[in-house]
Structures are given as C-alpha cells and as structure tokens.
Image (cartoon, rainbow, N blue to C red; front, top):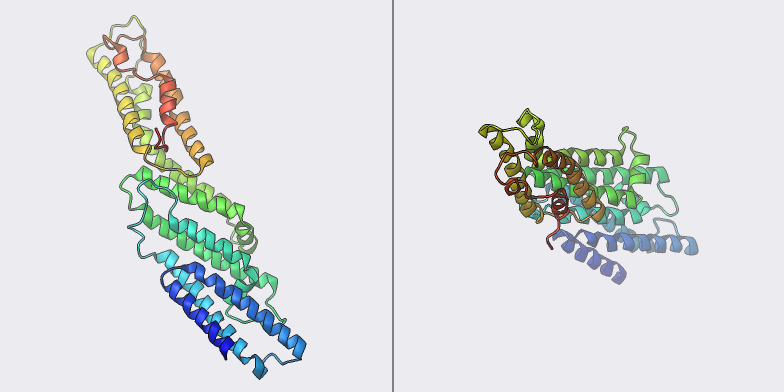
Length: 336
C-alpha cells in the first residue's frame, strides 16, 4: 500500500544515514514505531479487529521491519563504540573530552527518553495490542544495554589514551572523559537505572571517582622533579645564615632552584595548551597542583633565602610563592 511504501522509504533513508554513522537517525524510526503501534491498537479497539487481521497487515509488516532495523542499529552502535575505526587518529592535542564520549552519552540519554519502546525493541519483540513487557523487564533490558555501551566506551577511551606520548596528558584525557561521563550519568536518570538494575556490588559513581583519582596520580608525575628537589634529603643539612658553605653544598642548593624554575616554566608552556572543559574539575586539578607545591616551595625559600649559597641569591630564587601560585592557575588556559 501507499502507506506502507512511504514507511519503507523512511526506513531506507534512515539506514543510509546509519551506514554513515549518523546514529541519531534511529530516533525517527523509534517514534514511527510508537505511532504505528498506537494506530494499530486504536484500529483494534475501534473496529473490533483481531491483532492478526488482514487490514492490519501493512502496519504489522512495517512494524516488523522497523523492529529489526532498530534492533540491528542498536547492536551496530555498540560495536562502533567499542571499535571506532579511527580510534587512534582523532584525539585532540589538548586532552579534552572526546567527541565520541559526548555523542555516546547524548544518545544514551535520548534512548532513555524512549525507555519503554527501546527496552521492548532490545528484547526483539513487538507490542501485541495492549500486552507489554513488564516494567522490570524493560528496565533490565535498558540497563544491560547502556552498561554494555559504557564498557565499550571505556575500552575505546583506554585505546585512545595510548596515542599521547606524554603520560600526564594521557591521564588528563582519561580524567576529562571519566569526569564527563560521571557528570552526565548523575544529571540524567541513567545512574539510577544502572544502580537499580545491576546487583554486582559496584557503585558506578564511586567507580568513576576511583578511576579519576588513579589517573590523577599519573598526572601528578609532572611535578615530581620539583617535589624531589624541595625535599631536605637532597642536602641533608639545615644551614644558618652565618654558615660558610662548601662549593658542593652551594651547588646542591642552586640545583634545587634551577630544577624548580625550569620545571615550572616548562610545564606552564606545556600545560597552558592542555584543556579541562569542566570549570569545577579544572579548579580542582589546579588546587591539587597548588597544594602539592606551594607549601613545599615556601618552606624551601625560607630555608635558603638567607643562606649564602650565591653572591646573588635572587638569581636563583626568582619566584615568590605568589608568583608560583599565579603561574599554576594559568595551567589549562590559553588566553595567558
């Protein structure tokens, strides 16, 4: 019929878009599926037709085609998220949230808006009049599917992170993406859905927090050279202003400040080009850097600023604690 033909053309057009990885093309099919079922149920109710009656055949056929197409698309999307043919060539140089992550979370949120329909389609069944899957079954189908998508995304991001030569930037990339996923889960109803329908003892929010903290430990390796030289153990002695230092002792103190200054300047140059798009998360990372460095640096300056380790100490103690803190707040901001 003309009605069925138009529906088939819509399915064909959607399939072509999906072949080009335009996954949102599945949503018009989901909406069409919903509308067709409403029409079918209305005809059954008004005309006293049997569910398998001949007049309903065109609608039933179209519903069947859409069911198959949507189910296949959802399966293909999961495979795409895990494999992503360009997974090693499309990461941003600044370590920001990957486009795949934002796309996946957006699609998952939209799928949840059609939970009853999508859950039914994932089960691979069609509505039979007013008979529907139990709500608990629908929740379980959706939770299982989205959980699988998240695991595929996590695997993909791990692969993408290995593209970066800088381990700290690789960690920052993962932190950005995990933080984005975590925030998105909390802002939507996805987190509740997954927590309520998976009984493996895993607190999903806590899992992402743990992953972020583990990557933070890797990211913090950037300032380890500074922390090492600021430690007392490098000289082994607390000097007084009146002490006459050996050349080796003077050199050790000079080295402390040289390493500190060089590392700070180099990291400012590098990390100004890195990105943390979430303002709160950016501030948290900056504060962690400041907390790890400022008090140690202040202590080092107090220990040596009055010690005669050079004819001009200011040649080495070139930054005040305020200067250092200001420098650290310039990380992840290209406008400076």
